[in-house]
Length: 78
Image 1 (cartoon, rainbow, N blue to C red):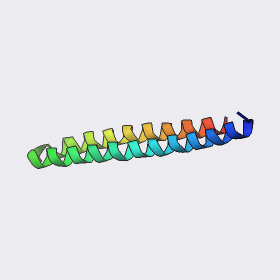
Image 2: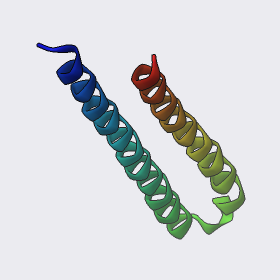
Image 3: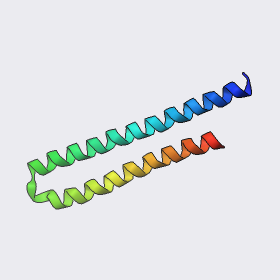
Image 4: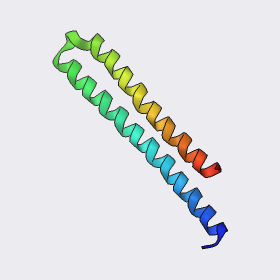
């Protein structure tokens, strides 16, 4: 395999990794909000506590997605 081909395959792989990272983030946040809405509908008195937990979970999911994007970018440049 020529170095040029390897570079192009690396770029395609990094792009796919970034796309999958963002897709996973979207699914994760969707599931978090879906579960929170269902829980608040069942027990409205727990809304404040559930909202806090929901935002913590959302921040963790976004942080992991951001790490995935950064790692793919570093693999592409490195």
